[in-house]
Amino acid sequence: MKDTDTSILLKVIDEQNKTIESLNNTIEEMSVNIKLLREQIEYLNKKLYGTKSEKTSVLDGQIVIDEVFEYGQFNEAETSANLTEDIEEDLPTKKASRKGYSREKALGNLPREEKLYTLTEAEKVCSVDGDRLFPAGKKYLRTEIEYTPASMKLVEIYVETAECRTCRKEGRSFMIKAEPDQPVLQHSMASPSSVAWTMYQKYVNHVPLYRQEKDWHNLGLEIRRNTLSNWIMKTSEEWLAPVVARLQEKLLEDAYIHADETPVQVMREPGRSNRSNSYMWVYTSSRHSERPIRIFDYRTGRAGAHASEFLTGFQGYLHTDAYAGYEKVKGVTRCLCWSHNRRYFHDALPKDLKSGEATLPRKGVRFCNELFKIEELCKDLPPEDRQIKRLELAVPVLEAYWAWVKENADKVLPKSKIGKAFQYTLNQKEGLMNYLKDGHCEISNNIAENSIRPFTVGRRNWLFSGSPKGASASAIVYSLVETAKANGLNPYKYLNLLLEILPRFSTKERSEGIEQLLPWKPQVKKECST
Image 1: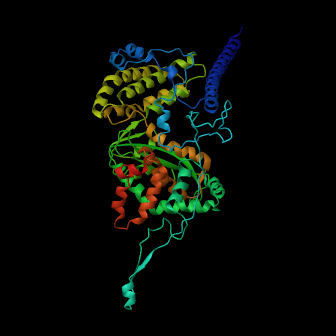
Image 2: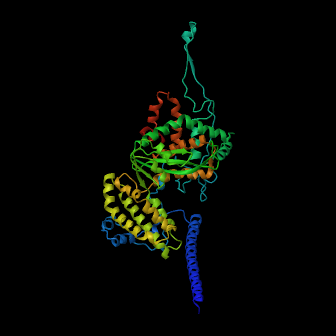
Image 3: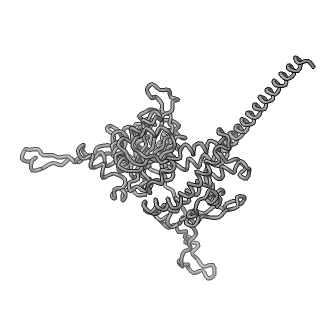
């Protein structure tokens, strides 16, 4: 064979090898993409059709403590925490009854009356000798709950006038009128109770105004939804907004705040499309605060500047998710949420929990669960003792966790669910560890997420706010409703109390009056407790 033929052949072979290598790379890349797409399909199916709960009791167990030994840590966490042993994952868990439920306690606040079925006079005859029958006792059969539908009435307001008759006899005139309370809305038939009920129905029971309009009609009153909307917006702006402003001042005095945000669609925002997303932000006091506060703040966007503006003057621990916008808040220590961290591993779980692909996400979830178990053990301790106990029990688990993450992060596909879980964990390590610095801090941001949940439930019913003023009014009422619930108050009673009493104060008296109407005040708790 000639040299030219050999060189041509070698060139062809080299080109073929390159083609084969390229095809192999393509196949490998396609295999990875197929795996990622299958994972995404499985994840979306789980989100659509699977359980929404992130409870992972079947993943709890002793394996995490074994990991502590594996990475050379000591065993104080095991001996002190009294952790449960492994449970069989194939056995269905029995649904527990409601803990602490008492029928007597549940019905204790309702008035009672007896209903007695009696014999007719014709039946009160002895069938043996014909003598008259007399009562000999009664037998209990059952207890029923009787519902009386709501009623409505018109209250016509008059002012009494009194005169001095002596002055009248002597040709003088002396007359005086009683001083009435100011109406909650001028030139309106709205009363504190009717406005408070409209707010309660919308913001607690999630009943949109068009359905409330039908309810009022069924009770005998023709009233339009735009009238109900005006009631909410005008009373919120005039009477309730100053109360929320005072609550915000009190919140910023605290050293521990939780924050979260969720999108809301608002119509007729200047210069913006109706399809643009605005945001409802929520800020709450900590679980251990003596003054539970929940503040909702409507903003046109999600920029961190909104959080920075709201939290002006706050210095302390700020509990949030990992959203980078909160970095705009200066002078705070951010505590990130371990529930979010666990959620990444939970989302990476495949459908088959026994498959090899489930190994890493299962371990991630278990590590997080162990930390939450430790929090459960410490939750009733004073803050100083809680911090000591955390350092004793949680640090060994955390050291094992970070060693495990570092060892496995490079062994998985970066764009896979488990890869993203590892990357999120490594990126947020500092914020995730900050809760160990103070016993008042929380391991999660669940208190803010739970506070914002009623808003997201209501949003499914009313879909959007009709205007920026409507969104601002919603933020005000949600703030008072959720703060009332956090303080053990009946939200309707508290709204009614505010709308009854606030119009009575003069401008000079209003500041002190608002102070006495804050939801943790003894008299307010006495009148509005559930």
